[in-house]
Image 1: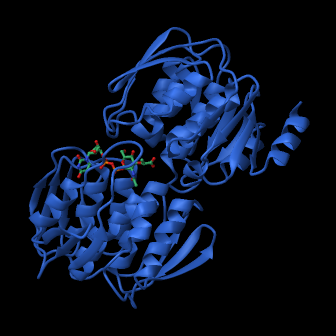
Image 2: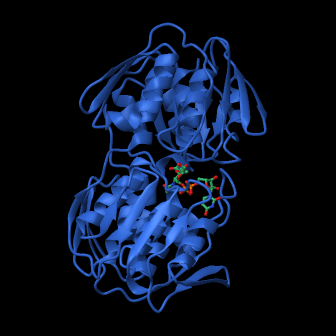
Image 3: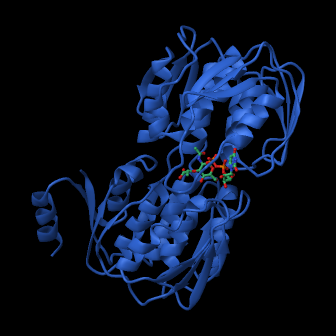
Length: 430
Ligand code: EPZ
């Protein structure tokens, strides 16, 4: 099993390039099967979740040609089934986007029901409510969601909770439905807009993506396109906090500054210098960070996917900070690991009370999920001494070349799989 081994204490300095957005790519890949023509998708991040999604698509007969590590040609002409294997949904929940895409195009889909996951129970009732409103019969049989319709028709759908997944799934299913669909209380995340832009580039008629009311007029067919995915807001934010937590100076390049506003605002409150350019942000931090309070919210609020990263920085900031997680009920699991590094944290329900300490100290810890895992790497980079992180496959699901990019910024981090490699690292950094 691979681990990261880190010798902390070096400020990160330099420049880092951000890859394409994983969560946009997952929706876009599914949407690509809604045309019989070949589609070229560029700026795909080369991360495990994307590779699993491409495998799930191949399993139903979609032809996937990886033109480069960051581009793929997708052709669903020879699709041989509408039933996705449990193998894939078990590995990535987002393969449920194939439900909306298959139902929208083929009027039929069978996808295993994803279970709960490490960050919460994650129901998908709103996705199913949307499909039913569009005229599909939806049932759960033998652990799978079966959705079928003679034909789909437009509908007026009100989402009870702002949901990225439900918005994207319903948007895909409605693209080729008869008439007009209105999704109210839609999610406004950048990746929702990117999937809408991708569908529009294939000829879909979608208005209002990025606001809370999305209007879709069904079209008969979608056509070929070439599309480049937006930069990853969360990857960019993670490097911004890596700079903050290590008192570094990092230019984070190839991002969309507008998408980073809630994150930049918190870093400024915490005392960092944040300089914004056309497609880059420079973070520099001198001296101890200030504590602050933060509550996760749907976009344009502070993202839940950036909650562990800010908490790590706050664990070394001055004073007491309160972090409220309002999206997922189980997203503080990493706090016990952080406490093992010396952080003073107390979790009560969906709130964490963090009293900043002067310094964290290295420890052997495990990544409980993707974002918390990345945040624990930041903790290791900031801590005194050596940190070893287990279960790093979570992190590899969503961060391309994480250790390599951090090394470019001066971090002492290696991916190891044997005790001998660990010893070699310890010798090198001692
Ligand atoms: C997406 O998950 C992201 N995943 C998550 O990123 C992200 O944390 C989340 O949005 C919130 O921004 C992908 O895009 C693949 P939701 P999703 O539906 O779509 C409730 C990462 O680390 N809800 O917006 O599953 C739900 O329980 C991952 O990259 C219902 O009640 O999230 C939650 O409280 C982790 N019923 C809230 O809505 C539903 O039918 C928001 O969830 C659907 C959701």
